[in-house]
Length: 139
Length: 133
Image (cartoon, rainbow over all chains, first blue to last red; front, side, top):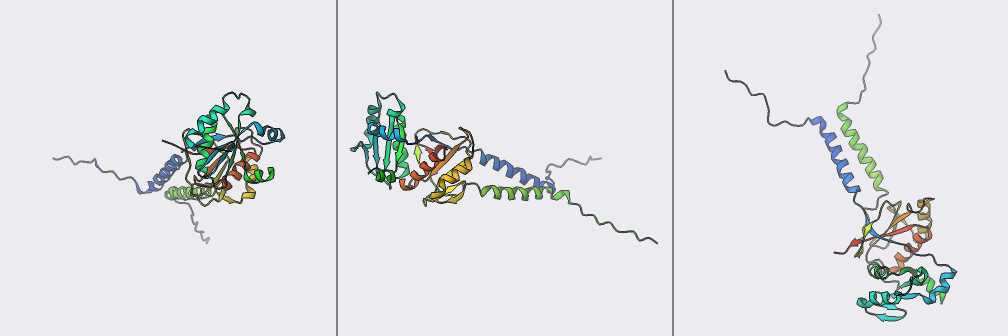
């Protein structure tokens, strides 16, 4: 007599569990999506006060426009910028001496601003910004 | 003769538990998305060195149309400082991180007021950037 095979090769999951499976899948993808960390660059902008206003005359001034970068009013090549800032900050030890004032033209794109402020920080400078509004008041 | 009252049973079928949980989850996801800024369109600028930003209470986005959004909600330029201040509250140093997500082509007239507002509100600013390869 032949013995009947009882084992089934294909076992379907019970239909009642599909809700739970979907739930677990959603939780999995949500966790995956939420653990993507943001990466970036921390930056501290010092607050300006009266002492800093007096100090401004000794600080480096960088003016940025869409195509041009100037250091203390002198137009510089983009490639030479890092070396020049590094050179000027060479013997400055105190934080207040290493402040670099960045003045941007209103149309300067963020990517360009980030590029040059990164170079200033790499050269050892401490960035402070001067907006157009402040420039007009100072004049 | 006493007539027996028919007891009607109103049990939630246990089979539907998965579906109930699923719908609850969808509800909370939609609720959470209201505070999320992933639906906003902006492209990060590039930098050579980037580091992990950590957990932040506030996220300020300047999108490709130069509009300000704080934690996914549209705000005006004049409301920036007060909104950031309110969200940061009395949080101690180190827990006052503000993520600044600016579209790479946004002009200075839009991102500089945002930087000033974060500084005025006493936030620890982190520019969200993309690693340059």
